[in-house]
Length: 397
Image 1 (cartoon, rainbow, N blue to C red):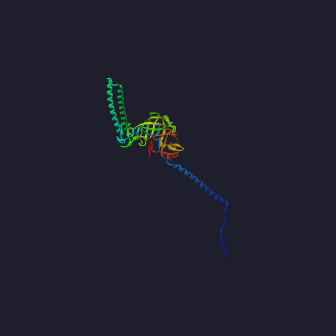
Image 2: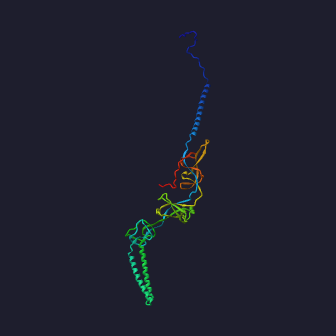
């Protein structure tokens, strides 16, 4: 093919291009390194900026204070009490029995009634003894007539003194027979040995009783004994005449008063306990022998101690502790409250409060309700609602 040459046109082909100059490799490395440095720096700066923003977020978003009920540790004189358990027993209680054998002919009482001392209760068959009594009385009458006649004759010197002595002996024998028979008859009539209340009847009319058979129980409920035991260590604080408060399960919330009347002089060798007996009046007759009783001996007062509500103390295997409310003023003038766990040494518990031997001083505020959701140092806010009343003895279900 021929190429036509035009005017002012060079001889080079029209579609040919000028060759490009090659880029140097060093420049490429610089560009890539710069881009990588910018990328890495941006990532580092982003992580730093994110961490700062997270810190600022949590610093400005603190959890709200926990609402708790607070109580003040008080210095007060706690009653010095010694508590023990025991049982009630009647001062006078017996199963009425017959002294001799015999058949019941009459029952003169109703079960559960109140009787006075000497009141007849049961009559046993005593017809033979009544016959013997009539016989001895007749003999006594004849013997007395013979004795009077012998004395008259002897005074006039018409009879010997031996006749008088024989008549006197016969008369004395008749009187002795009367006394013996009357004693046998009295044994056939069973009487109440003392005043009290009868129990359930255990005999029937016509029943043959042997000596010692229980007829009915008789109990004097006007006064009872409270028997309980204390340890050898506590026995040194007990004295006759000290007041005792008693509580029974049958009458919750009620207290009965008594006094120590007997302290066993010997200490049991097996338990090292000492037996104590208190006497309690029972005018209403609501206490019964055999009842389980909780006794509290009132001892002389001890010096004042620090006490807090029982609910304020957290009992664990690692020790007893309370949350003490601490105050801290911030730079802006505001006062923040926080609960600090403080380990304490506890003592006796009386009337819903516990004695603090060590760890808390008078005037400290402690968390009484709501400490289960707290950690040491947690912010708190004191509730204006009064804390619930703590019973001295939780109810039994």
